[in-house]
Image 1 (cartoon, rainbow, N blue to C red):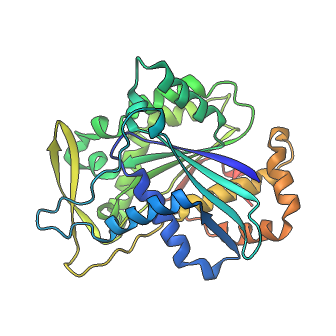
Image 2 (image 1 turned 90 degrees about the vertical axis):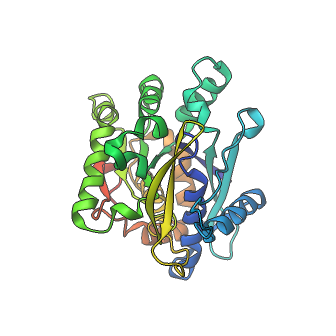
Image 3 (image 1 turned 90 degrees about the horizontal axis):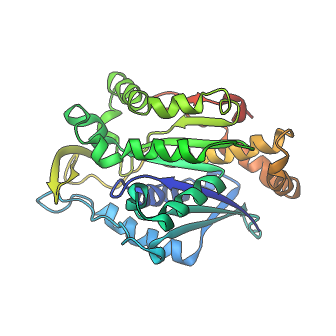
Amino acid sequence: MRELNITMLGARYVGKTSFLTSMFYEYEQNIAKTRIQLTPDQRTSSILGNKLAELKSLNDNPRGGGVASTEASVGAKSIRSFIFDLGEKGKKPSLRLNFWDYPGGYITAENNSEQQDFVKERLEDSEVVLIAIDTPTLMEAKGKWHSARNRPLDVISHFRRYYTDIKYPRLVILAPIKCETYLQNEASTNLLLQKIKREYASLLDLFSSESLIDKIAVVVTPVQTVGTIFFSYIDIVNGQPIPRFKKINPDAEYNPKNNEQPLKYLLRFLLKQQIQTRWGILNFVRGWMKLDEYLKEAVREFAKDCKTSGGFEIIQGKDLLNI
């Protein structure tokens, strides 16, 4: 089975597992509309099932504490790979999507060569990188807690260090998470997009450099992880900013929105690489697609409605995504 690596880059407590849970949940809710099947392996299914139960009960307690973090303890055994097999319904899967997650502390591990080597390996081997952004700390208090929570300077430094002499195309997804509060009207949505571009300007400048601009597609895909919660306040726990939320009403149920959009962009990127023959190193993508023409058309149908407005934007690399 062919395998595609996706690195989930983000500091601790940002909400990467919550995003994956909502991504799969939204896909499952709309599975009748697609001809492709996304199947988690047993371990992934167990972790996401537990997380789904937490998300569905988010903010049910009077203090509004929300969901406890699933941050793993630092160490080799704490590295997690969330595996989803992709294929035509009723047939054996032909592509494995391997979402790599690891303790957020790895991103700031200055003196640990083993942890730094792991991040290096993941960034160099992954065709897709998803940068998870904690939206409340980006937007509230004039961004006072953004650096502490999202560690943008560490994220940028990793790309500067490891995105050199790129030989084949990459997709980088900037995914603001838990952004329900900031997508309520056009003004707040535009403000969120502007803030992302401003706070990650150095990263975007790197990607638009002469040596990278034709090899890297960059998109912004805001995801509403729960869909029915709004930012309340920022709590400081052991020196760390922890956003707290409240439901729009006591009876509001879990209703995530747009979490499937990063998946759509990911598959759209793959399909484009199959079509674009000049990237010889991606023969495994072309081989997969040629073996599964029916699946190829199913992916095209699934990925055709990637959003490009309302906070979504293709910042760079439209030619790497247009199908």
